[in-house]
Image (cartoon, rainbow, N blue to C red; front, side, top):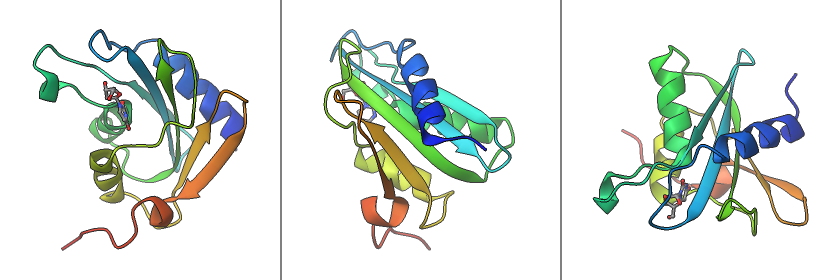
Length: 132
Ligand code: THU
């Protein structure tokens, strides 16, 4: 069983791969599949700003493209220059993209500079989400 601390550690390692020369804000994410596999991602910016992608969607894309569609939780960390500051909450697009694949009780884990780990459920971060 993968504990939140381990998932956070994976997210912190993934943050080191971040390519963020424009915002200087580095983000790492670690997505836990139902079978225990962890997929990580980092933000990848681009000179054409909207072409950049968030860490969470990189992790999700890697998992989906490798045949995984069932997930339990995700850990997200970030900060300026890769120094974790406040909790790094996911943007609205990432919440919606994750909502496509997860249940209401899917968990998000965050860590701040004081090393405090907190969690929220999908239904808390994106209530009443859109679906067909
Ligand atoms: N970013 C993420 O990677 N995930 C989020 O949920 C919020 C923002 C990235 C995008 C951009 O590279 C940088 O953080 C600053 O917005």
